[in-house]
Length: 306
Image 1 (cartoon, rainbow, N blue to C red):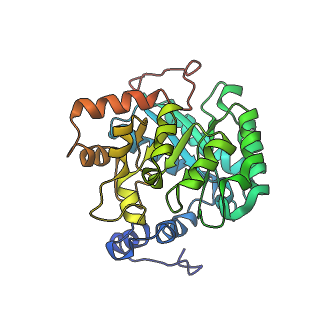
Image 2: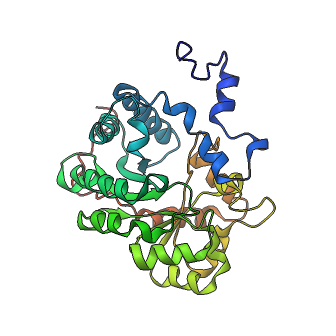
């Protein structure tokens, strides 16, 4: 990387500043997303992607995670020549190799980035279907997601991509309500037909929307640490997860990005344990598992000791 002048560093401390959101950088979603740029130079190559995925799964196992959906945007890993299919296959290779060693259920959720537009989203939806878990007797793609800057990119622009993903029996989720108001969450529900909502912080300002999420049992993927870092929730404010629970909205406790947020599944649990009992946390995780996009019937269980 030094040869090409790609922000070379001399120490682990310097690298961490490039990878982990620093306190002075908190407050906006764009600052959070900017942290993804540096590691992307590493994950442009098939072998590197495989190694990174195996490492992620290993770390999840250490945190006692039993069901793990990895989210991945193929297009941002094609700058060195990989095709969409190769970029997806690299992740699946790492996941299947890890699946053979650890007692964990794995599935891949393909992300399309809003800034790349509806056309790319449709292409990625079709690529995702071709690698769908239910079509292969191996760990595969289980869901479709939309992420990136919300402003100027309303959910309805991507309706055709979601229709394609639905036709391929993929689970549907979307990053929404993190940097925009509840109107975008309504769009995601009514026009995209999503099963789950990523973040959804702005939903707390709309009681009718909260009742709709509860009535239709649409799960919200809550990322407490990340939401404070991006400014989706202001420091000192109560996190929306408690309002969701009050209204009976199903939730999952998620990490968003463990590296950028310097967190883990256990740390997220510990944050919520300041107000919730262990029994409540256990019930949240048990109920959230029912919303996983991973279909477990075909999975070949392999003991880690074999």
